[in-house]
Image 1: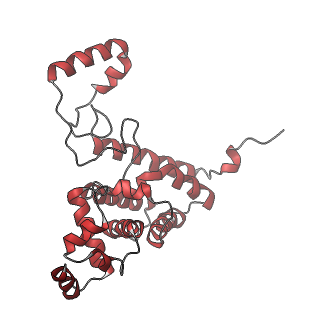
Image 2: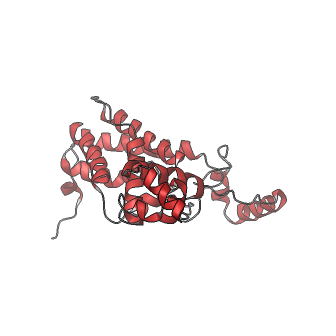
Image 3: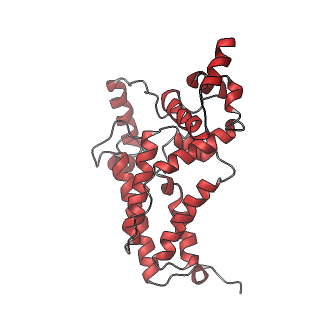
Length: 243
């Protein structure tokens, strides 16, 4: 213990170093296994040394999300709002693919930090600077949803699953037999599931290409926003009035 205290005195910590180390550790062991004690061991300090820079585990997670946001490319000044938003969303997706635990951390935040609010505000600004009305920008942000952060809540995705875990490989014959039974009962699902080459590591669903599906849906949304913008869309026109 004496040696550990001396080590803590020698090491100069700051918030950025603590958060960077936490991100790297979460990349290795997952965010659920991350603890203040485990992080202190990684930094070769006593746990109490960390509390000078992060108040608790929640503050640590808030800071880690800020680190991830910092890895997302800032928006480029351009008159093409659609291309700018698309580029930034895909940059966010690359950041989350580098840190497979980040989605869980982002979804678990109940109180937005200044960094999160700045990020959301920058997206709203891209729509507004593109000529969107505040009304349309509001609804576009809702429709974009998690894609703003580079992920989607897919129908077949389990958000509680550890993205870094390697699932056991099923027996090919058993899979073929199961698929044949499903195809007989659900012919329409079988038809669309076999329509495209599959990505074996897909989180969207077996038979899907994650990256293609993500970009396909993103482009549909952006094209739809563009159409509504050019048509002068307003939510007031769509809401039914009491008679």
